[in-house]
Length: 143
Image (cartoon, rainbow, N blue to C red):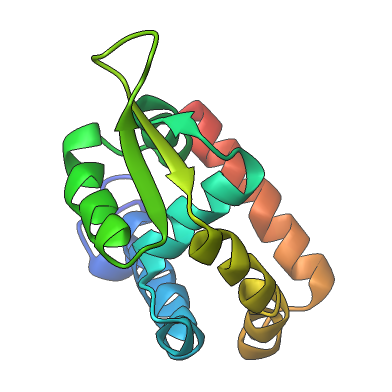
């Protein structure tokens, strides 16, 4: 019998349930985000900006663990939607400062319901959700 450490069976791979769970949870966000007129990646950017408005592109990239070239088209679209502004830093022209517009700030109020909405959609108790949260962040911090 092959050990799980060397098995190439799909059900023995840690990556598959992580990937599938992530995809399915992200899909749970779609109905409520659609009503707000934003996508899941845009929601993540807004979460960062609602905590720290007017930050460098590199700050957002670091917080979301994404490359700036991945974020640039996303941020351009958010600017077109009137949610953010993108301006050159006054102190260092190479830096782009991302800030919320009034519309982006107002969306926070509407988005306040999202965590409760998700809690109702996911088949986890509050204790299980906290345990999963800690396990995932442990994995993220070590990989």
